[in-house]
Length: 103
Image 1 (cartoon, helix red, strand yellow):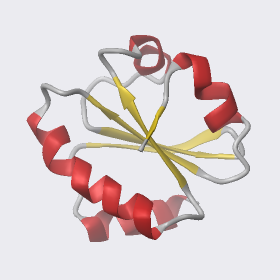
Image 2 (cartoon, helix red, strand yellow):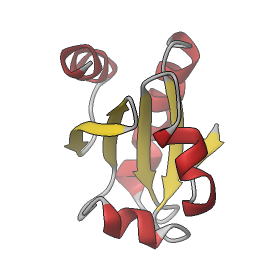
Image 3 (cartoon, one colour):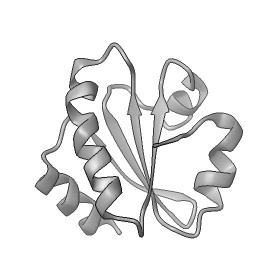
């Protein structure tokens, strides 16, 4: 899984030719641990979308920049711009529908 930091954010997200789904998470967050396999499965099945993870403890600046107040939070980017956000655990069906609705 692609780890997104402030150092690679521009290259991997802002300048991505594909839409990008970012999962903001932390190792101490139980809902994040429960949601992680759903995000991983989504990434495996949707090669047309770049999926990355942002550890909020290691990339606080990105969490602050995008006003991530709770985790897990998903941010969806298209053409380098944030187009949607969702906080909380989603089922696989909800995740698929949310991405499709916002792209």
